Image 1 (tube, rainbow, N blue to C red):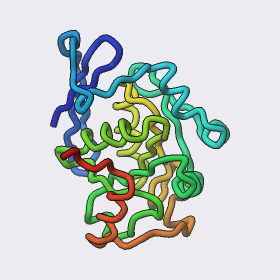
Image 2: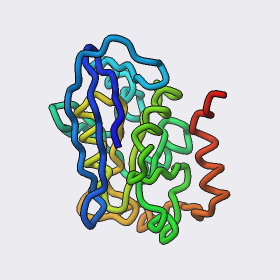
Image 3: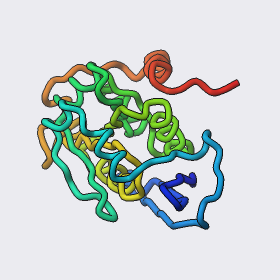
Image 4: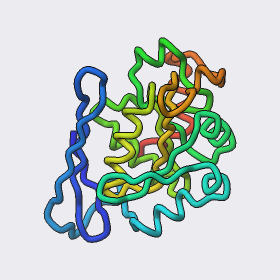
Length: 208
């Protein structure tokens, strides 16, 4: 899958493909020709430095996140599972569970999170739609143990996608922390009805 994102003077093609066998993505980025004009529907205009500071500079996030280097030197932020849960319920972040439907069914989806399978062709397009609809709200990502979320956040932040946060503990925990489920944070069942309701509450509606 590929999607052009306009970053200051240039356009980058961001491609995410599922990897082997732990489902970590392979992310390929390459500069395209200098962008002249792009539709608002397809272009996400960002100021790399100022935009990142503005989007992750809320008082709550300034206190609770740790900065970590991303690809190409762009900063990314980290949160614990508990911090992400509290922030999602307060509306301070949009929390995205990027795991597979099978994983959602196995453990449930974290309360306050929306499920977006990172393997789907429209994954990046949906993230851009979320950013355009919520320009001042950080987007946090969570996976099983923190590997996939760290990789995706790092790759996209390195290409100038602003306001991304890595919930590095993941759902089940690991070397980065205890995790959502061992911490006994609430989850909801991954029924089609629940998933549709969660997405409808946050995702922008398509233009008619």
